[in-house]
Amino acid sequence: MSLILLESLANNAIIRPSDGATVNFLASGRKNGRVKGAAISLSGRTFTMAEGTLIARGHRIKCDASTQILDLSGATLPASETAYRLIARISRSGDSGSLTITHQLASSSLNNDPIDEGNGTYDLSLGTFLMGPNGVYDFSDALPTVTGSSSGGSSSPPRGWRSSDTARGAC
Image (cartoon, rainbow, N blue to C red; front, side, top):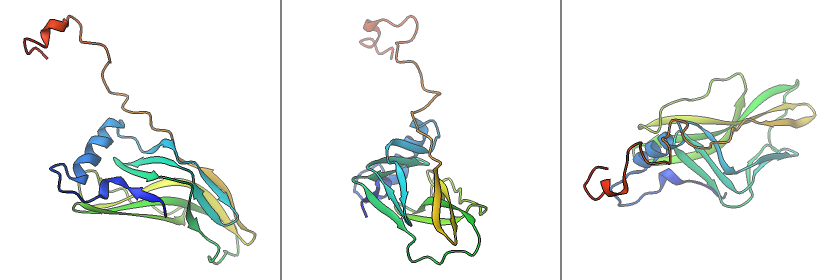
């Protein structure tokens, strides 16, 4: 699988994966979704994600090439049409994290732990689909596009600011 949970990489740096997730979550305006690309499609009983990046509570999920993310070809089809949710599940324990792509009944609750602050499990809903006696169909992508913080400041200097202010330590 070509999916990588970037905030789980072990390193010897002072900034830990949880620190990076916290910064990312604040920079995204506390939003979850698609940062770039990462379109999800359904063909038969197989879900595929295109190259791109998702963000969930500050944890970036990078797909470096078109990748099969879930294959339901071995799943037993329900006798009646049933709604399901496709999810990216991120589990955190200390500085390690794991990513699983799975599905669950659409009526089931999602895990909503604040994993940017520490341990727990967070489910990012990727979309919904139906599964019934005729197969898997009607996938609907649920991911909004994340464009950054709406509470961020202006890119202009503060009112009354002069370029000489930085030399005097005013900024």
